[in-house]
Image 1 (spheres, helix red, strand yellow):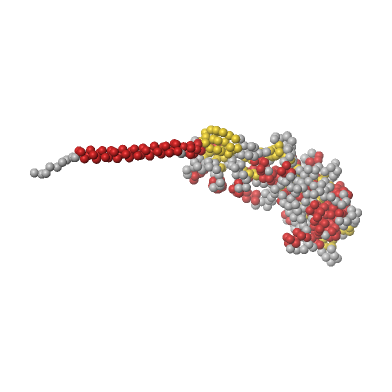
Image 2 (cartoon, rainbow, N blue to C red; image 1 turned 120 degrees about the horizontal axis):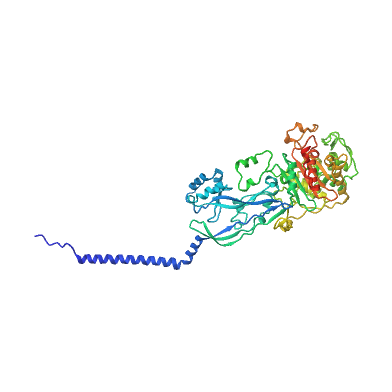
Length: 632
């Protein structure tokens, strides 16, 4: 008989079940306690912290860009405006797959490799959290519609409206105004980053750059409520930005555009000043370019076309062109000769057509091959006799000439608000020894006496020196800003920081004030005398002009050779220069004209530059804006 086997032990099973139930209950209770503790920790102990984090996710503080100040001419004509435009932007925090998003956008709108390259560069720059990064600008209405209809497929993509700079007159004023462009990392490091938190543009050149601080304004802020995707639901609080100040410039738009028609197709520059105030009436450099291309970013094709052009449209000739002033500087040299008693106004010099320091030495030619005969100061200026000045320069030496040139602003940047203006240098014994480790030779003085050799000046410097001559030594500093205005038609309010930016050069006090009249009389003879080199350009004027022609040599020619413009390549011909002020009795305008390679048969200044100046003077003084050069 088999032993008895117990199939189940109910007592033991009950004990096991009870133990397991208790263990499970304890685990559940412990887990509940942990959960309750965690809830207590989050809701009570860490309440303030997580409430703040939650609020930051829901409520954001966003910067609001200020409106950039507008720019007007002296008569209230708008020169620089702001226009709305639309761009497509990406919010990095919302974009899951950047490459896929860019590919989808490329199916909807045109995206060039350059657009994507610039976008990635901006993406890597410093930016605030939840700050959008622009991908492409100037969207058309059709492109805006395509992107808007596909928002559901493009998380993080937005179409944003913005105000951007617009120059209504295009290429007419770029060398006078400058332009704005996209702000880069280096520029962002130089400005108040907080004030530029919502700004994409900054002044790059000219007036736009110099007055950036007052044109930009002050950034504003707004608190906005956003959804989980970061899109704005409503504005909770707003501090409006302070718009930039509007500027009124001394430029005259009508005169500026008229001068451009006179210089059309030429590499040239004209700078016109009011000699009473130093206000810049016109600052023209041709050829030019459209600044609107640079605002949101110029294409490589267009930029290379400008950069590689042999006519250098990007080059501001008025402020950075360094040209030998040639005979236009002779009135200043004449003053130095009179003040040092080297010559009197009545002293005469024999001009056989050349000058020699010694009998067997080099011949320094006069522009008139057969010479002018006996000439005094008035004849020397009227006929631009080189030999008179050769003799004066040789007898004076460099020191008196250099000192007088310095008093007229040579070697200085005297402008108040032209950041690109060159100062160049003032030729002297010390300058040559320091820069070239060479002594000053007598031949250097002879070259300096007719505005050649080492001496170079910008058109702005030439116009400034002419204004000082018109004022008989009273100094004015060139400036373009008249003041700040609230709206067109208001009287401009002076901007003190600009007026006090530089110490004004000292007025020129001559030993004998009659020397001003003697030199200016010679400049009047240039225009109205029977032998004046520019007498044809002054025919029929109802006002009196004081002027001086000049022809600057570009390439050297043999000592006994004759200048023949037709035998030279166009870019090797002499430059044509002219300076003038009028009316002589009460000067209202002083100007400098330079036409590159405008020399024709030795008469460049008189035949090319002086007629341009006459047209400008008639326009400003008589209101005659008919271009008579087109009919000649």
